[in-house]
Image (spheres, rainbow, N blue to C red):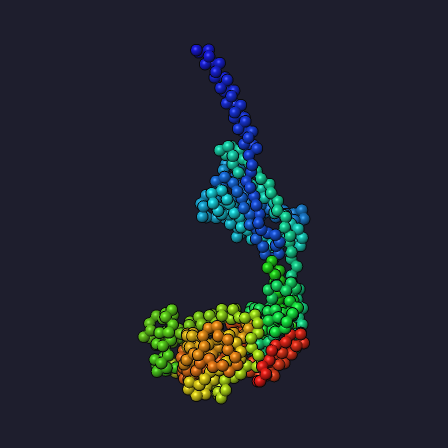
Length: 495
């Protein structure tokens, strides 16, 4: 028996060794992680790398991603072994199924990278990619090179995958050419430029300092079959911008490449009036409770403190209301809806002008300062308020300091605002024509008496209505440019 056992033991050991050798050999042939890159196809100034790694249990020993172009290699992302050495130690790339990988595992310059688990076996790397992040990128082809290893045989061996993804780097900006001539801008007023942009679908418009005004295809100005590269952009030099603020046309594509073009223009300074507004307890009692009642989402510390509540309304609510108006301006129709010059409300006297600088006094002391961005027009109480031009109603209801208010969209960023109404006769979405009744004048909101507060808005920014009331200004500053560029705007038969 003992002899038999002595014979069996070596045989078992030899078989075990042979089996181990087979397992070791098979482990060496185990497939590495599966790698798929869906982005980028093309990058420019901006772009994104989207890399998917499939590996059992989401385990990786390492993940190295590099950007290669013209013989140079730049590290993009690195997930090293857990101990940083060469031992076969498993590093779980995303141990927490909901948490991104430790930012310390990314190389310098990989800020913004996120390696996250999606499911039991999948890891997804999202990494910003483009010239803005990697300055070495130049026009032409480039490659993303990936090396990933995963543990096999309980971590005693590893399986490796090498993967390359080719993509194109395009750093050419859109092309621009200004078509219109003779641009004259009043401080606080508006202008228009006609230009061509290639490719036509690039985001484009006019930049005035930090403000951008979108451009629209000229087809929206009424010309059928217009060259798709031909665009129109209305813009403004706001009352609070320096008269020397730079103005240029811009265009940027989806890759972040941007081109600019200058054009000839002249600006004209305007004098804005200083005015004094005297506040009283009676005025506070008339306006503060009504505004707070109609603005349930607006909070003041103590509604019974009428002065403090008024100041909060005049400052904070004004900011909220203007932010809403600005956002509304971004939803403008891409087509011009107005026809000919705008019309001042008939038989009205101007009580306050555009950009009046108002100091507010209470009991002989200055308590606030605001800028009045519109015209206050008064006639008789509850006078009919008529549309200044053709447009679509985009707001009809209460609007904080403006009380009952109607805003019309006239297309391509242009809107008109009618405030302090006692009643409203239209609803959102209504299409109105010149002189259609919108409501009646009143004293709702921050109004000391019955009047209409009227202003023009361009991309949500207040501009003086005086220009738009002038038939000569509309003809010379807008319609002439359109005709010279081959763009026609329908005009009303009767002005």
